Image (cartoon, rainbow, N blue to C red):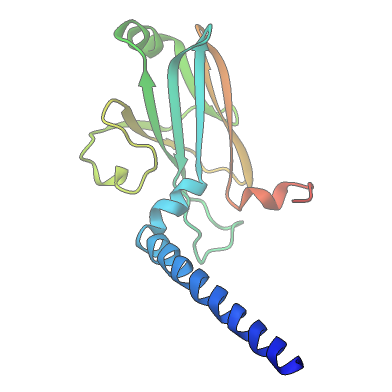
Length: 176
């Protein structure tokens, strides 16, 4: 009797292990093929600006930070972001170009470069669409591990996007 129970348990565990390993292998293969994309996705934030219940501006921001061998205290690289901006219509585009600002902890960008859709910097960036406009925005280096990017529009309000050089869960005190 005991022997039958052990054999049945072994058979069931082998059956379950065989089913899950196929799905797990496929998932890992898919992840490894797009590893850079998934890493960039972890450093991407999205904000929407509304007029009533209608989205007027969709903003996606990806922080391009790669860890280096240099200690964080000695790392003086600039903070680089890829900003995607989608505006509902041409009147919003004209208005936004005059009325919005983007700051990192209160500091204006050092440079803003317009990117074409064919630009290689957009290859692994999440949420790239044909109807969006994309920019590389470079801010001066910050020593802070956490910082806020503020998108401000006089017509539609403010949105704060939170970024970190480490995984964000490191900074939370909540239990998962």
